[in-house]
Each structure stands twice: as structure tokens, then as C-alpha cells.
Length: 254
Image 1 (tube, helix red, strand yellow):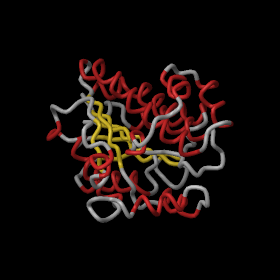
Image 2 (cartoon, one colour; image 1 turned 120 degrees about the horizontal axis):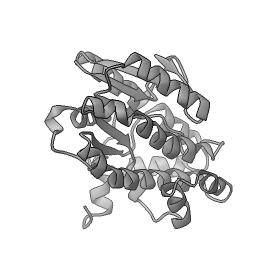
Image 3 (tube, helix red, strand yellow; image 1 turned 60 degrees about the horizontal axis):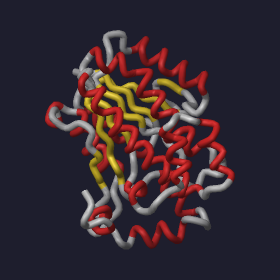
Image 4 (cartoon, one colour; image 1 turned 90 degrees about the vertical axis):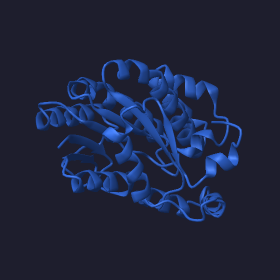
């Protein structure tokens, strides 16, 4: 059985993935702010480094997979946390753990979002993320709304994955991403309560072609597939798990 790391593992999609891995007999090392195997605030450089050190201590023979699910929602009042956690901490975690993943020919599943393709985002913000210019990217928290920071960050993360995938695959590590649609989690529950984005979120749910919101287990099932040997020839892909929303909004794009 394998050894995997899941961040954001205390709730929502991350928790569902961790439970799914464990039910399949794997060791799943959870990382979260709350009660978890490793407690860490990945927005902080020192805590991220400490979490990586502890992961490597627990997995001395390497990692079979990594799923960075920790995220800050669009409604977060500390807007700079959105790009810091969703993009920079995710990319840094992947890069620091890449040698351990290479050792066991592992897989990475990133969490993008179908919001990444819903609109055009600020080019300068997306480029700052891709260029690794953290100070410049975080400064956009002063001028952009939370949903722009969130969607633009997920768009950048998907592009980073695609750019990084070739080198990772040649080193034996498959990198893919999920693009979840509306999923009933604590994060979306908080968004529904936000007077700025709650009304549009409720309207958004009513348009899901499949007729219902996703549950965390829907996302976990897709992540477990991409981590498994059944997806052995899939690399650099973004899998939309959104009840058909992306196809509805962009029928001629794929």
C-alpha cells in the first residue's frame, strides 16, 4: 500500500480524499490548521517548511501521491491569503516534495476550479503568480475582489500544472488537476452567507446541468482515480467535476 499526503484534510474535499485513501488501505498523512496528523498554517513559510520536514520524516521511503487541498475561499476577509495559500503555498509544497514523489514514481492531483474558466482575469495578476512574484501578486488583494483573486489564482495554478507536467512526467511523476464545480463544503457554506457573493452562488447552483451540487465524495472519487494506476497514462490533464457546468458555459472549448 502507498503513502500519500493530503492538505486541508480536516474537512470537505480533503477529508473525503483522506478517508478514501485510508479505506483503500493506504497511509494518508493529513495536514491542516485544525486537528490533523500534522497541524500547520501553510500560509506561513516557517510552518510550511516544518510541515514538509515532518512529512519527510513520516515517509522516509518517498511518497506515492500528493493532493494539496488547503485553500482560502473567495469570501475570506484577509484577501491576501487567497493567492498565498491557493497558489504560492501549493506550488512550493509540490516543489519541495517532488524528490520524494520521484522516489516512488508518485502522482500529484492539484485542486483548480471551474471558476478558472468562467471569466477573463487580470492578466498582470495571473502573470505575477506564474512568474513567482509573490509581493506583486499579493498587492492585487488591495484592488481586486475576492472572487477575482480566487478564480484568477486557480487559473494560474492550472497553467502552472500544465507547464510543469512535462518535466514531472519525465521524472516519473504524473501531475493532473481537478476543476471542481460547486461542492457542498464548509467553504461554500461560508460563501453563501457572504452578502457580496452569496446571492450569485445560490443562483449558480440552480444552473448545474446534472441537477445537484457536488458532494466532497464526488471530488474524492475523481482524485482517487487520478492517483491510481488506472490513470497511469494521464498526465497534464484538468478534469472538470462540475456536473456539466464547464461544457454548458464553453461548449466549443476543451
